[in-house]
Image 1 (cartoon, rainbow, N blue to C red):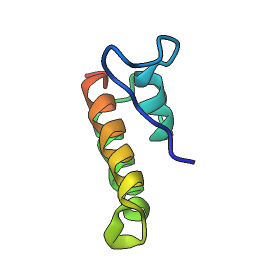
Image 2: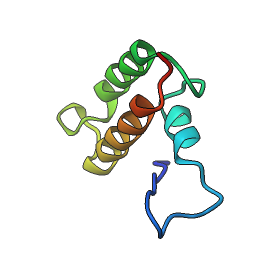
Image 3: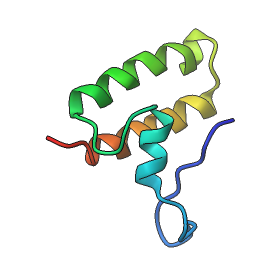
Image 4: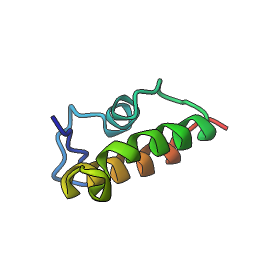
Length: 74
């Protein structure tokens, strides 16, 4: 199941895209930038279209990574 990360005025007010992003990467909210990068690199090995994943999964991973990276603790 691929979660959808939504941003902007049409997003579900109850959804927390930051928490969803960290959950998708299997990290605690506020993980370090290094942990976010490592989780992304580990996950991309299975979801990248060149490695048997789908384009939709890869897009979701990219969105989760961008969101988590913005909110990673220094």
